[in-house]
Length: 253
Length: 108
Image 1 (cartoon, rainbow over the protein chains, first blue to last red):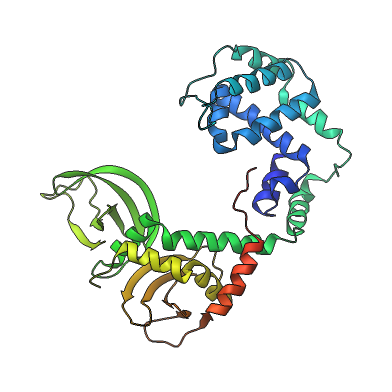
Image 2: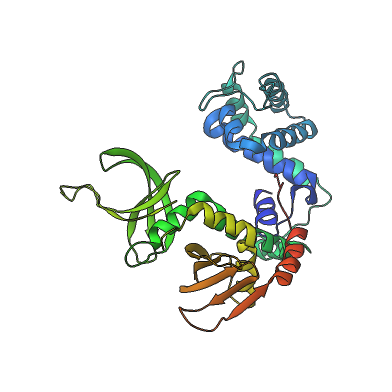
């Protein structure tokens, strides 16, 4: 079911509302299990991010139908806990990173999962769906591809996603700044990939610089500030040098 | 290259609908736009509306896009003939199509 929902949303570009509600409920119930097993209920809340309300509603709906204890009770407790820990202004759930909701013995969940695996409980529920069409494992990828291609809005949505990506490249200040800085190098380079940022000392000042890989196969350090963007030569730390990094060129804004 | 300002480029990209224009240019040139990289190169002031030159990297080729208030042209190199052009009417039609496929608010 996870593969099905992933394929329908990523390849078929169906929206949540266009899928069978039970499918997204089972999807989020499985996601819930994976997250709780990996890092507890706190991880489920954090990794759901802005989708938490939909994930919670789906998990609740699935557990209500399944009626398998102690999962259903634990799910009800989680919903109640989240409701009572919402910021009154933002509506977001107040929980710090790596913090766990208080008042639940997570060992109870793990013991239940060992005695009666939650995934098996889910599987038994899914098996009762009249909408289910059995497909051999070998035929499943092709069945997913066909189902994904049947979305009449897929082409328009693909184009919308493409335009959105191009629009971001042409209007995002960081991307435009990095691109300009690399283009202004003596032999212009095109930014191909932007990696992680790190604190780097440049001209005696600590700056947040980002690794940038260019189409010439070179690595640069790029900085985008309110008044300029600049690309710097990347010198690995193990090469001794008097001046650790020299500016290649910079574009000013 | 002097006077090239990040904020000016962004303002012109919004005004000229550059993302929309480049998507349509690439489709007309039969180039898959999904992995295209777009980088601002230069702004050329003009009384009829500034021209923005973009560099485009797609399917292992570096190309150029010239973008004005009237539309955009895709060039394979520095001085070659355009391999695709789009005007304001084309952009309006493409915007309608794109609007039908909007997934702006799309929770899972």
